Image 1 (spheres, rainbow, N blue to C red):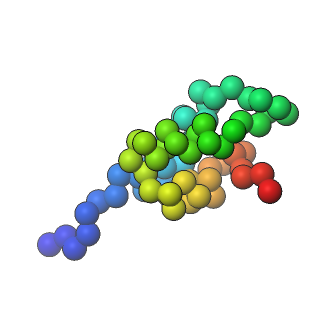
Image 2 (spheres, rainbow, N blue to C red; image 1 turned 180 degrees about the vertical axis):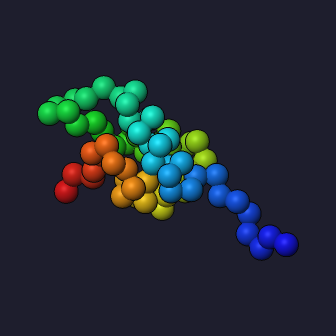
Length: 67
């Protein structure tokens, strides 16, 4: 018996999807991209807002939130 529904974007899958989306964006300045251009497609794909931040934490390619 399952008590919870499976989550579409588990941490490794979310990080992979986040990198796929980010790699299609064009850098604006110093190799940076606008986070809004990545965030919206990620959420439209079915991910939850909390999964966005956890995907950034698990990402190993260097995507980070600028302060």
